[in-house]
Image 1 (tube, rainbow, N blue to C red):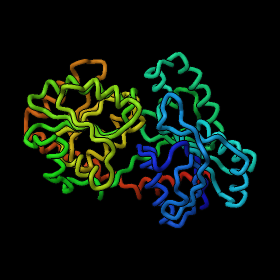
Image 2 (tube, one colour):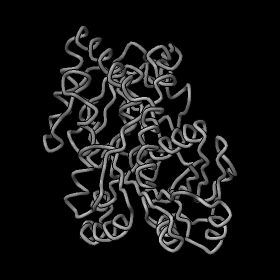
Image 3 (cartoon, rainbow, N blue to C red):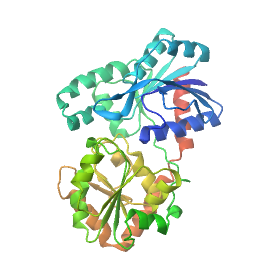
Image 4 (spheres, one colour):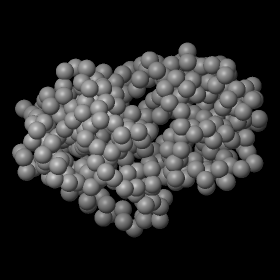
Length: 369
């Protein structure tokens, strides 16, 4: 198949969407498909054999990390040259609308996928009154597609309840070779804990945005005697968070990738994830693949991944003590903590990227048929 992929975000940006797209493109190309990526310009001209057509973009005012690329006529010229069998738009917002337009005007089958719970983000940026309008815009865009994919059962149900049609599940995926318990190193433990490797080590990995509610980790940190917190990632909320966590044993690490990120997951005692806006939470799977038990809000797509008390703990995000109790329970029994680590790894081993991409190819073929 020849697949034209439109995405609002791609390399060099680092987030869960980009991670999924990287592995998907790699698997598609490896299995003989040909992919052309339309995305905001980031300096790359190809990735894993796929051609990248980058378009000039400007930063989103509320979220400068996110670049918006406007549609332009040369997209149609590139599509005519590439002759795709199918167009896949990822989180259609601005550039994705061009993918929808050309799919309709050139009579090319269209698939869309939903990865970012944008309507829930609005309340964290003082725009909650616009949530209803945004759902209507999303419904109008997604209902142009022959198939809409979500990455968790919770989001499948949410989109259907909002009037979005032809919705199905695109199964989760994680790199179980890169993220592995064996990647733990004494050096990384010492680095993340800032020279206190014997202390309980809590970890957060992800974008530092208001919607991630990272402030909710502070009372958890205070409740675990001697605990240290490592925050891996960056984003527009970092300066606020550094001020908020000032005076606490918190290490703002910045971005980590590859073997360093794998080691960070593997050495941590618990992965704390308070976000209520996740469609899936890919970082949870990465932590679990590294054998790190997760403590996360019972919200969005997260319950698809975590079985409470078996491979991690879920807490009620409305309960101010929920995350504290869950973390205290984790640390109360070293034997149970070891079992949770083993169970977390076993769960992650079920979800390789090859299987997830094979399922996607089956969806593509169904649309083409």
